[in-house]
Length: 313
Image 1 (tube, rainbow, N blue to C red):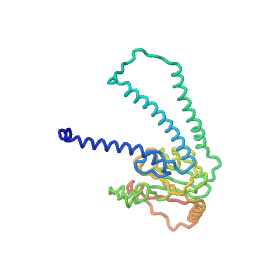
Image 2 (cartoon, one colour):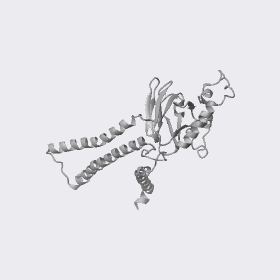
Image 3 (cartoon, one colour):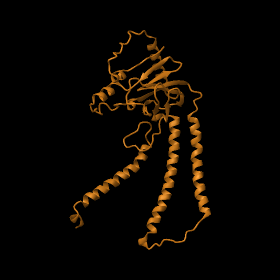
Image 4 (cartoon, rainbow, N blue to C red):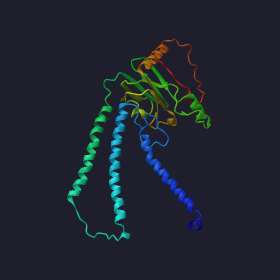
């Protein structure tokens, strides 16, 4: 009868059911996300475990803090819920006009948070110190940020090149065409030259910039490092799983900041050694011709879109 009097009631009920279902699904998503290693998935709410020791350390510290917060939240909001429903006015509850004080309770709820903070801070501090320990690295990569590309130098190997967004993504972007994501599933994420690294190898990074502040960030590696002109920052990684890992410049650096993707390809050591030998062989080969001079009348956008690759012997 009520449904007939209020035509929209069924729709309202359906809408509420949909909201409840969405909420329950959202709560379940972090659990499903625990299984993800490196690449994020749609609607993922939790951080990735990553593929390095550092990323695993960060993930473990995050999960400890998360579950501590969940436990505190359950206790606090549970107590609030009990108080609201058990001592509500409709049940005949009367406000107490006399306030009491307990020194023991005050000490208890001060000591417990301090103990929890120490429990979380001690291992986190150890992991943070380890994150900056670049000693005993087996190789060093120099990363230099430019507007709007990256330059990679394999120090001691005589190999260097620049890496910027691939031509196909840049062409689609500047044309204004809406890309077909089935055909271009890595639109704006691919580069013309990937950073190739060996697995199971401690790799030191020295990171700087030539013009403005950038930030080199690949989430699967577990860290982000600023690239600042005139300053050299350090970081390190040791990738355990071969694969392709993507990142972005994470510091606003100008009009094309959003188009500075990073692609890291991790190869088993033997494959990496063959790749490196091929790069060195290419560096020793004679140059067939000099690049054509750039027309000064050419637009700045076209000039920036042209790839610049150099392999030095």
